[in-house]
Image (tube, rainbow, N blue to C red; front, side, top):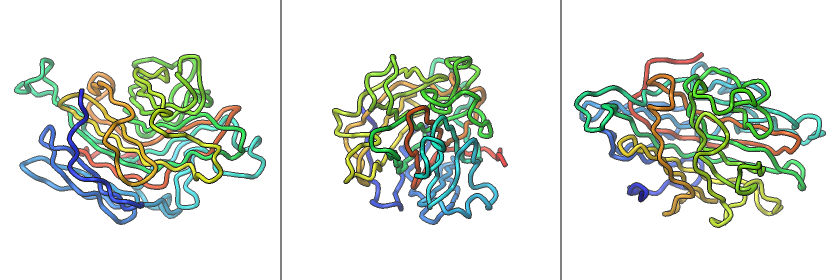
Length: 312
């Protein structure tokens, strides 16, 4: 399937412009620019919700409704540290860590609709998100384990016990692959497991870390947690979900301009994955015996519509 048609390119820097496709009654909306800004807009009877974090100040943790910070995640140095960020004795402080950070408001992602033209009568919403991630080696010879954009049924659940290492803070040995997990994730993985193509790949995970679709990033010139000392390890990531097509596209680049070619595109029916009709968006990451810094510098998301449910 061809990727969706692009309307605008994202602006450079932290103040990025988010594109929402005109699918499933959704329309094009610009992302909010101020820190921790959220707004809604109605057009043609449909509600759209956008939130924007051009940076992550420490004060976000004291403001209700901004973020749900779970596990070993912290807000520090104007970034979300999904796993701890420290150069002090990394073998002591960085090994076997997990963390999650979730946006606390739920989004309605599907609804039953008898008049819908789909065979199952389910109407799925579309969403678009863009974020700047920094995967950085705390020790030049070591990287691991990985980072994921998470679409979860529960926005308050911490990383499961034993979800460090290759489980990316998503699952563990006893729950991996269970439909009761109710999540989908786009992983950026820096350790090769027996089921992975290499130690530099992107994958679509559904209820487990054995990706349904996976692609090496090396052919795209992308090196996650690079050992190049002149590279700060940052990348821009765009994820577009088309609810009508039930398909997801992932794009990556070093700068603020979205490329024409996705690094991954895959079918994804979120109505068959989520445990209910709403979902929470956020990030998960882990380290193992191998470790790296997993930082998020900015994040925008637009979707329609938004639920009144909020996790505190």
